[in-house]
Image (cartoon, rainbow, N blue to C red):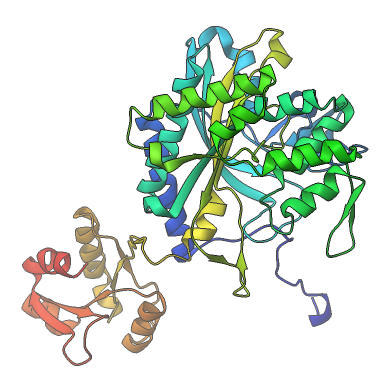
Length: 464
């Protein structure tokens, strides 16, 4: 292959390799998340990467002419199959398919990658990992939804955040739906209205951006045009006035329609249950969150970080919610024809990782090995005996894999790997039954220590 035809290494936009400290931190986050899911009573579930397209529906796309535009779909014989875009739709299919074998209240957790055919950037990926916790069955909604808030708080604290670094925002879709019904907004416009409201806190939107989406159209900085809901001026005015209300008591006095009042009452019940635990102050109302996915029916939650996050260019960015979700009443009934309600949350693991990589407060446990250097090939058997001894004592160890390289090059390899300790044994050491330990992080000239071979394990444990 000539130089002109050689491949250029790279990835498509929205995809990322992860290694070294970033991958170590991700594994630490996953362990904390999974431990909390288990602590709160869930059992694990894993589903395939692909689902039959018609089974998972089309809840993402904003392009009415192409409802599956935001997912990756492929033709498989006579069927269309789609890479899962979330973990809730596969859960609905699984529960409908296995309902007879499941308990009346089914708590499941699922940690897998999902795929979105959307514009990447600022912690948004086209392939990313979600960690979901759901409760399915006939339950007390206030108890279940308060439990989700407790789980979010417990998990983020275990991930290394402080209480002042995140806030759990909750609302109820019935509040907005009641206002929409009161304003007599037609069914075909309602999804656009809900999605417009949901964008209030997104970068570049604010009240003006929402107002444009509620009216004829919004033109963003690039010149792209998004068609609006074409509401009347009075309808737009009342929605914008609603979005300015922050207090639950004031909202209760303002919105008098029965459906909004029902949603407000359900929120009050959640706060009552939260008051029985230690996370009440971590949860706030935010009536502007409505969750763009149409299958949410009442309770909704979004968790945001109170820390500065910058992109690769050092510009401060808003990465959005790092844990969100809500209650759904009809998602499973699409399959069974009977309503099996559920409620759940989803951690955006890679988005959380993107933010936490910028904090110094989270310690990453690096388990790099001790390097056993190979001084002379005739002692290879002895070097492997040392490696086996270390591994048998739960000390990570590796032997240098090229006996032709001199000691200097072996230590250069160790430094590039950022290893802490090397073991050096030559003819003198083997004759005297000693071992030389080199502390690669120590002061030059003072970092070599020759000890009896019987003391090797104890001395190493002091260094690693």
